Length: 461
Ligand SMILES: *Cc1c(COP(=O)(O)O)cnc(C)c1O
Image (cartoon, rainbow, N blue to C red; front, top):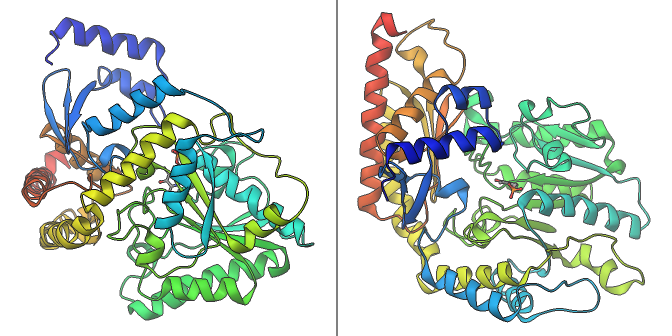
C-alpha cells in the first residue's frame, strides 16, 4: 500500500486544507507536516501510506475489541444494506436486527437490565441517560431531583451535556459548560491524591467526596451519580478496592440512581462482559458504545433497569427523545455479529486468562524503570505514570512534555499509544496475543530508555 511520496503529500495537504480534526491543535498539525494517513488494519496491526506498520496499543479509540479486518462484519453489513439499509424505529415500527440485538444484549447484561434504547455515540447515550433520569424523577413526583453527580477526570463524551458530565477542566474551557445541575466529586485517583495512603483509607476518602458532593447539592435535589467503573480517557484510573461498594451504599442511602458509563469498560475490556461485574456494581442505567460494535459501525446503547423503565412501560405518554438513527439496522446487525464473535472466540475469557496476566507482567516489570512512577493494569487496560523528576530533580518541564515525547517515539517505532497528563495509557484489541504483548512492551521499553537517556543529558533537558 505504499503511496509514492507525492501522492501521500497531496493527501496530507488536502487534509490540512479541508478537514477539521477532533481534539487537535491545527497549527501544530500543519507544523508537523500533516497527519499520518492510515490505510488498513489486520488483527492488532495498522498500516499507513508510507507502508509503516503500527501495533495498535489503543484499539483505535478504546473500541476495536475484536481487532481489524473481520470479514464476518463486512459481510453482515453488506447483506443488511442490500435488504434494508434504513428504517426508523419511531412510529410503531421495528426491524429484525434491532430486535435481535436487544434480546442478545439483555441476555449478556447484569440481571435487572432488560430494556435497551439506542443512539449513535457514547455522548448521545449519556445525554439520553440524563433525560431518562430526569424523566423518571418527574414521573414519580420528585422533579426537583435534577442534579447529576459526576467526578473529576471523568470522560463522558463531547456533546454539551457529555462535556459537562466530564471532569476534565480543559473541556470546560468553553462558555456555558458545564450546564447547570452537574457537579463533580473527586476521582478515586491515588497517584494524584492518595499517595502513601493505605488502600482502604483512600477508598473511604474518595467515596466520602461523592457523599460530600451530594450533601453540598442537597440530597433531595440529586437524581443520579454517573461513573465509569474504571476511568478510561482520564488515564485508566483504577479505583481502590471497596470504593464502588461504598459509592453504591451512598447512592442507596440517599435514594440516588446509579449510572455506569461502560463505553470503555463494556464488552470484555475488564475481563468480564461489563465493568459493573468486575466491581460488583448494580447500576440502574448503563451506557455502552465503542466495543458494542468494535467500532465497525457507530452505535451506542442505554440499558435501563426495572426501576427507571417502569414509568415508561406503565404510564400513558411518551419520552420525547430519540435519534433518526436510533437502532440503525446496519449498525445493529454489525453489533450483533460483533457480540457473537466475542462469544464464539471466548474473548472475555482470553482477556481474563491471557491478556490481563501478560499485560500485568510485562508492563508491571516497568515499575522499576527510572522514568516510571507507577504502573496500573486491569484486564486489557493499563496506565504508566512517568516521573521525570526522579531523573531530573527540579526539572520543571511543563506537565505532559515527557509523556508526549515517549508517545511520539513509540509511534515512530511502531506502537500506537496515548499520552494522558504525564502518563501513557494502553487498551489494545482484546485479540492481542502474548507475543504481541511482548512486542508492545519491548517497543515501549526502548522508548522509555531513549527518553530517559535524553533527560540525563542536561543539554536536552
Ligand atoms: C468515548 C467515551 C464516551 C463518548 O463516546 P463518543 O462515541 O465519542 O461520543 C463516553 N464515555 C466514555 C467512558 C468514553 O470513553
